[in-house]
Image (cartoon, rainbow, N blue to C red; front, top):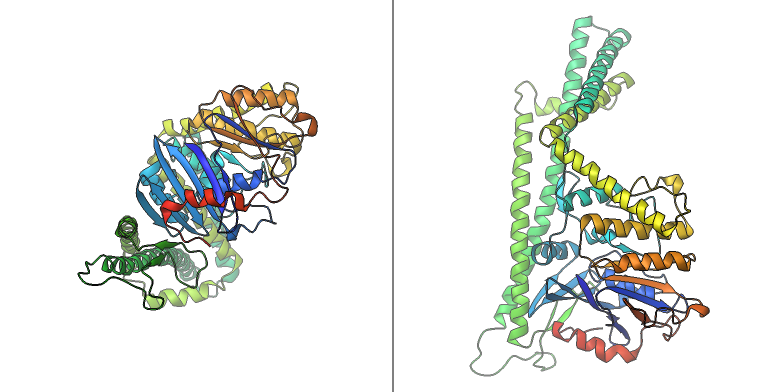
Length: 539
């Protein structure tokens, strides 16, 4: 994947960067406010990343364009708010958000990794995927992923394993025996608590009370399982309904667009308000600011948009079918749980109310049951995987860390750091040049192990005064990679021109940019040309 052009703009001002080349690119300036970070963030934002622009930059007022090459095919994407438009050859595709974009991407550009999240297999969002090869200037936290929210560090690791087809692993004999022993201990604790609970609280005969406790615990467990299944069915139905509603909306849209294609033997189409022959189409309702407006006066443009909508609707059909299958499976589980003829729905509701007022002992018994269930689940999952997969997962992590530590020693032979994980502990966050080196060696190691072909982008790659000697080693190591590499840096006065005419480096100089004003009318004509094929009426 080679980034060819990046652009930002609207009808009043714009900026276009089209000097990128394969290999190593370094964007430099003589100050920190010449637009390097905005250009890099625009690049990532255009392909779905979360916005991390400087606070003074009103990013919502602009369109973002990126042009890249993948497997000898050129793709162009323009983003405005949460809307995306993509052109592949002469095909125009429209996406209402990141979810639609990533589904198209994994189907038509290259496969994105999938992980299990909230019990459902899902394609990872760009905000996580891009962290395999992109490091922004801000939030360089070595102890966590960027934009930690929906995703976490474990998801990042699972994404790596997914890329290498190493999802899941089998427990070894020692781990299996340890889990079985822990289950046995929990059963013993449960028996003791039940005995104590009977002695302390029983007002009936011991046998009768023991039967009541057993019944309550069993019912409480069943209630929890039923609630969990109901919650999952509710979420799946919401997702299916959302997909169905979106499909219905696009069905109406396609009817309207097709109606414009009818042959008119006498006369022509005109706007009743202004008598204009020009007809426009917007990608969202009038209440939403983040919408594209297309000129659909020509049959060709209407055909492009109709084809895009047909692709979108086919994707929704697949999504609806997937959710329907998942709902059916959960309903089968629910039917099996409710099949106990000795338990009525009324009894479940009544016991559920009583359960909230249960004693600490009973609550502990439920905790034990949950833990036993979790441990048994680990054993069950283990049975469906292989010992070889587990060893491969371990080997992947060891290999990544090995490459990281070897490159670190090359960069700083006298350094005393030793990387023991893809993330540091919370109380071991690196700062200064240590943080810079950590991210530099991590991006390098991930490429060497995963062998991805994405561009490696590091904003401020030598921040905190990375010494000249260390910088030279970093540059030479990254020049060895086949990937496109894009670094940015701020140079001191005595460093000006240090990257000029250096072999293997494409130097892009931003020193002549006006401070805090990289966008201007000078780029507007070029910007309009870049997005002309989208037929946008830009703001």
